[in-house]
Amino acid sequence: MVFNNLGKAKRRNLITLAITKFIHGFGTGMFTIVYQPFLLDLTNSIVLTGLIISIGSVIQFLPMPIVGKISDKYNRKYILISSIPLYIMGLLFLILANSYSLYYVILGIILYFLGFIINNLNTQFLVSENSNESKGLIFGFMFFSYFGGTIAGTLFIIFSQIVNSRFYFMFYILILIVEGVLFTFFISTHTRDSQNQNLPINKFEKEKENLWLKVLKTKKLRVILIFFTLDIFAYSIALSIYSGGLYDYYNLTREDIAFISLWFNIGNAIFQIPAGRITDKIGNKSALILSQFFGLGFFFMNILTVILWMNQIRNTIFITLSIGYILFALSVCTFIPAEQIIMTNLGEDQKAESYGIISFFRGIGLIPTGIIGGLMVEYIHYIAPFIFSIIGIIIELLFLLKFFHD
Image 1: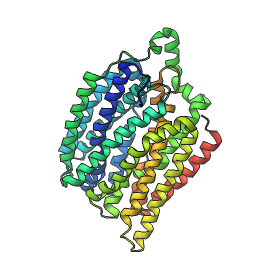
Image 2: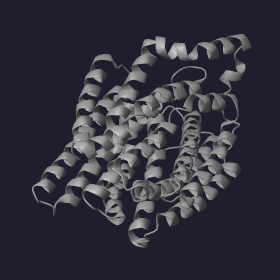
Image 3: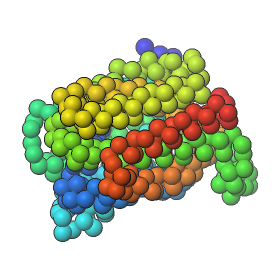
Image 4: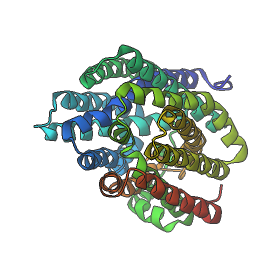
């Protein structure tokens, strides 16, 4: 059993987090599919859609140092609960938005993704703090639960056949309310490590003042920062406009995109726990290298799909895109446990703030990706972002092999 050798409180916390991961995955499974087509319908421009998506992507990272500092200072449970109203307000603004009120879209996206980072960071640290030595396996189990939920959300879109995207946003709000209730009544904070509170005040204040400088000057932290920033830039050039591109270039419906995405979610659900166990055995560096090879496979399959489409071979589109998504699932499965083990263990103290600082720099790497991806599609070709991402992954692999150590 995944949660063997854990105390009662820790076991209950992890089970509650796994349940909330599942229901949250149901909501994000729906949101991910309808989000970019919804924006494209409002803007009628792949470039403007990419720009708006970039705003959301940046919000996922730039406020992270502040969120991390607050998480280290106050009770993670209550900070986690505060993410729920932000999520809900963001979705409400998206529901109210139309083509004449794009500022509602921007405000909604800012609030939604601010809720996302608060939820994600505090959930990850609660998982880490309640885990035993098999962290890779436990993180794998949590994401298995999450992607099980995304499968359910994807199937819901396929079978419901509801055209209005706002319906899915409203349904997501109901899911978030249930999630907030579970956080409130079933998460215990009595097991949290109290290392920070035990530090002498002057030492703690000194480390707080020097933390940004420490991240930039310490070789290990600098290598981690460069790698994860490069990684998110390389992948996001293509992914920032991916669903919108499927909708615009191939004229796929939301149900078509949901069917293809289903293979990604199934792959994640199947492989997440084995990938977590493998990460524990082979180490973080080897898992990240393996992830990059699967990522190359994903982008190659998308390039193959474009080439076949341009040559009027179009009856294979669902096969090639689905294979690509399975490879992407393998990339994600082998990446996430290693990433979370590294990012939740950046130092003895102020772990969440260190996580936030590195995430801040990742956010800087994200800033131009949506607009670059949109401009590539608009002025070069739909295939261009995929080629760029492959070049980026090759550079990542070289960096991993030369500088990265477990």
